[in-house]
Length: 270
Image 1 (tube, rainbow, N blue to C red):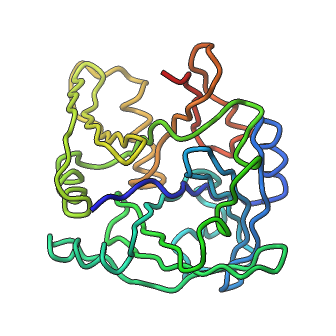
Image 2 (cartoon, rainbow, N blue to C red; image 1 turned 120 degrees about the horizontal axis):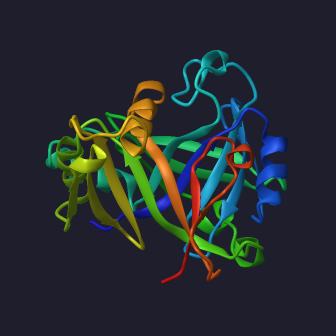
């Protein structure tokens, strides 16, 4: 069953500030609207490859929400990502048959600033290293606008790679096979760097699973240390995202004070 990247979620405290900051980085930002439960509102950054960033902020205390951050303990940054299925129900059923239990389909929706009401269904994963599912009931073009809003001054055209911090690469791969079916994997143990990683295809992008390993050669600081810190503070989930751009210069990381804690790197289109 084919699943592609739908969107990546970045939680922020102040949506207006986030819109200003991402616009300053050269992104075209669209105001999204208020979600049906009244707990959150959002803005979107749509890409030519069909995926998008969701900048989301809370409008009220919502301890029942999986992205709620009581007391701003963890802070802004990546909190989740979603895959786009043809049918949420069928995808959940197929995963169940392979031993992976997603919750759903669960109704979702929001009202756009122009009054248009959008509806979708979601599937919630059992563990944090897996994405949620998000499938449209109303036309997807209403949720993810097309045209000029997908063009960005910084030349970004889509998501090249998502790096996911996980506790155990092999355990995560088993769960992803239950969700996606069989796929090819590129493995790259890097003991000198204190990490193990595996790369798998995810539609037009790739997903890199990375976990720290114990090794006497591990430097005191570096990627392994950063992954451990991420797992300790934020738990398993999105660690970094590489965005494809038209620019021909070397890869560069965007300023963290403007990305609200999200590690974003621009990489030239190959």
